[in-house]
Length: 320
Ligand code: A3D
Image (cartoon, rainbow, N blue to C red; front, side, top):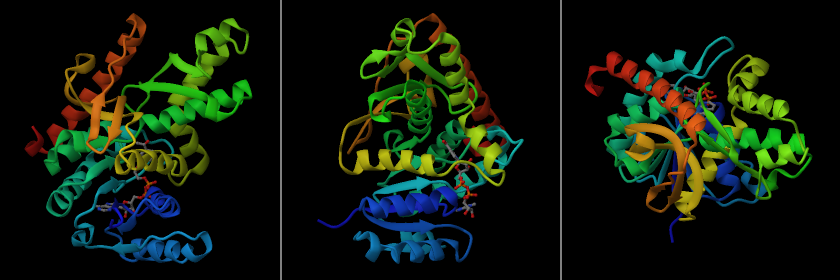
């Protein structure tokens, strides 16, 4: 069987890391696309030259021509601008919306059968716009945020409990922003929910609340440290997990920004929810029961996403 083809639209910090991970994991042949001349070509060649050392079989090609993504099985989109200190994700809306238009059209023309994972911020609005501009089926277009937000939550919890990250599961719902909803009730250490661990004296409610807040601010914490850009290792690893679930039909249960058709009382919007990812793309949205407080937090998050989508429609009338 021929190798899968993975197109990475945007060859910046995340794009380069995605290419490296995809090659190391032998997920398929990689095409790195960017408007910046030389960057995708240079990164592709550099990674290809690591192949003999790391012993992976994958070709890597850098390009400035959309025609080279033809027939891609997966497209991961990071094209656009990243945050600098003092900027919120929402500050990127206007400029990245224009980028989503050209990317959506490029994918529609050259890789209409691909599973598309958007990473560009502000995530929930950009994935919605990318779907609108590309016209691809909603189940084939999704956004990466929940896997990353949950990974951050899991990392902080594993540190607090001094246990392996492998035994910590975490649930984060809602938009990828300050209103995201880390669900402690559905987050566990080896199946034991966090509220029970508080009762068992493993941690205090105050410490748990602080971890929840640190998770919400996880992106800003990295931006504050790096000063020249935003996180890229963990975002890339998270999108690769989603791409692998699709390519290998793993039916993984992963949180991601998915188009809702009435689930959680939301229609025609992309919001972070648990999903099943397999060969059909987003095969299912998992609708869990939320208590009153969780529902209120989720609704607040949905309202924030709604505001951004309305702002997109104001900038590009073709979206209205
Ligand atoms: P960066 O290193 O700046 O790479 C972006 C790349 O996009 C650059 O190489 C640009 O040349 C390229 N580009 C710009 N316009 C176009 C275009 N029209 N077509 C093709 N390529 C273009 O950024 P990064 O890789 O660090 O981040 C990429 C995006 O991901 C940003 O919007 C970040 O805010 C976002 N991000 C999202 C998360 C989530 O969890 C959702 C996490 C971290 C970063």
